[in-house]
Length: 115
Length: 115
Image 1 (cartoon, rainbow over the protein chains, first blue to last red):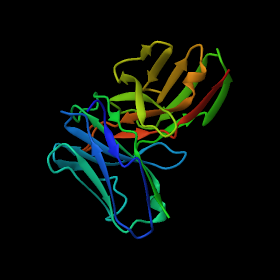
Image 2: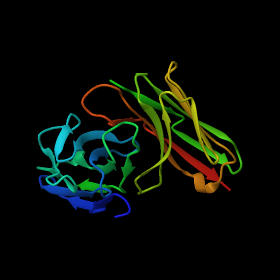
Image 3: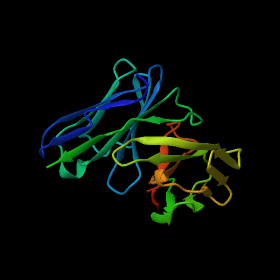
Image 4: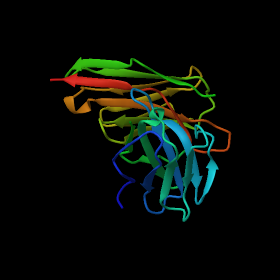
């Protein structure tokens, strides 16, 4: 595709439910990042993939959060036993490689609301 | 740990004014400094990327400067237009660590340009 695609654009769920958020990066981009943006704040890093492997998951807040990228392209962020504090916009970005000089291209995000 | 701060948090100006957005960071060991634009309900669009060896970058009416020694960057917008209204975010990937390209963001400056 032309850009980074994230689905769904909006997700409303109840406390305690499981959710999956999907990210389709730009074709050929090996680096993929997940960020979380709370209202009125800048995005905060969650996890970074280089290819299929999670090179850095230090930003995941707890073990309810998990992400995969099994074939080195599409990535899924999974949240178990959702809590109201998980409500935020989840942003995905990709870049040609993991080098800092590369611009990261962001998707429009998934707005998650936990009721 | 890198901390990025943006001042002001919000700015409202009449059309045609020149304006400056400020970004400060605590750790000068950065690869580059990036400025993004975020429209409501949208993802982030990269505006300018200044490499650590550079002092400034220009794109159209936008000019960004970088002073690593003082831990500051400024985004200058000339002849502002209503279409410039958005949230502006600065971010820096820190040198070292396991995650190249992992960005630390400021909280953003909400810019409103009124006709």
